[in-house]
Length: 343
Image (cartoon, rainbow, N blue to C red; front, side, top):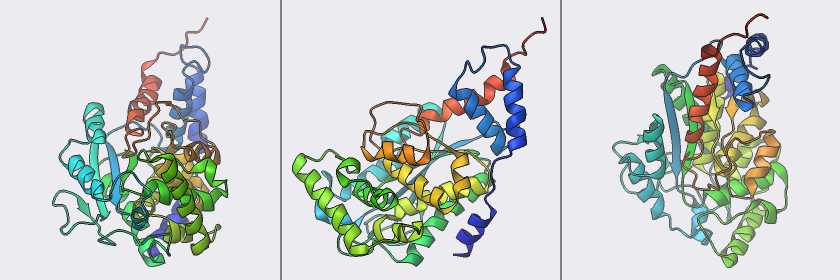
């Protein structure tokens, strides 16, 4: 709890003076005013995060855990698929692994509670709940202590990566059932109609979608989360992956490095972090708009305009890593483009 409290206390807003200077310099370059659109906004944002910022090392951090609500049949996939996908990630054979290799990013997988007998040898193991969370339809996902511990895993992960000179992060996740847990958290955060925010996840049919909506409705009713307490929402409705991703956003803001959002689950974690400390949003960069219906409401709640419309809904950080080159481009054009000549 101490790590989380100190993190929340020490997160600062961006340096406005450096952002104003960056804006003025960009306006002096040989190009049409605002000709590079969102790249210019990004260049100003990262200047506020760190003066003279440039990308050194990139990493996608995947938080993985199983979810007890999977037992309700809300997914087209069984929980063993969590294991299979994580094994593929660790072998460099998952979708996000391929994208990371293509885009020059490293991939780190954190096991917070995958339901298997032995920890993975080449994962980062923080098995807070070795069999995953409890079934949120029947009761709380985890204890408050476990929720805070998972959040602090995310903060600590950022601290360790920063020490290794990583300064651009993206967060992803893996855990069957986590579109259900994230939808439940989003319901608590926004009170939107469930029909608007609960989606097809792993490819369920209409009948299962109805079940999924009922499960989320029951979970919120049974657990009665305190909508003004993000930790309570995570504890009662979330997953270990959601908690740890929330910690990554907090850690990125604490250590002053940009962090890229992925899809629905990553976005809900970002919204939870924002509710803990509004300054956290200033360090976030949106990537794509997920096909999951709740994703657009997350973007609206954070007042973000996604850069990519790719019809993606995979998760894993697969959409977020695609934006890494845009961040590099935003840094590079500022130093590469010549000044507008005096005429």
